Image (tube, rainbow, N blue to C red):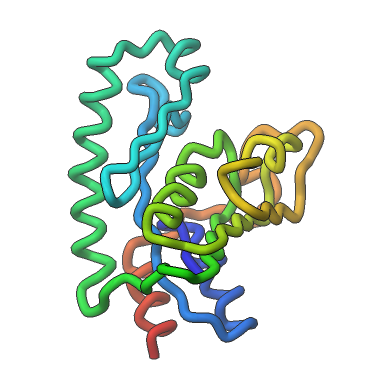
Length: 185
């Protein structure tokens, strides 16, 4: 069970507890459009994984130099989070295993795609991507990226992940660290 930070770790924790699976974080970081940070124009993952959403880059008129500048800053943040989230533990070995990747929702899919690529590069035998909500095209978008996609809600007029949550408050780093610690115990 691998949760995407930060909200995905909270969802993955609950699923892992129910099925009694080990939990870890899969480190990825959104690369947001410079003037609209929440819109992903790509994502980064451990092991130098870089995903570029060409449609978003083109429509936002982001130059390669701008993308690289934002990606460098996000790589620094990814490294900081690695140090924060993995203080006392090494990543779960994925070699030959099924990687169940969980997020709190899928919007553009960039970070989920990066997470799937990280899992594959780490030797996962099978990659399953799961989220409570995503756009209607989520299964099609991830064909060939994940072996299985589980998305509980795919509203026809999907606009944002937070639409389906009664409380979509951000998960804090302290909460992520606490959940990872609790899962290891």
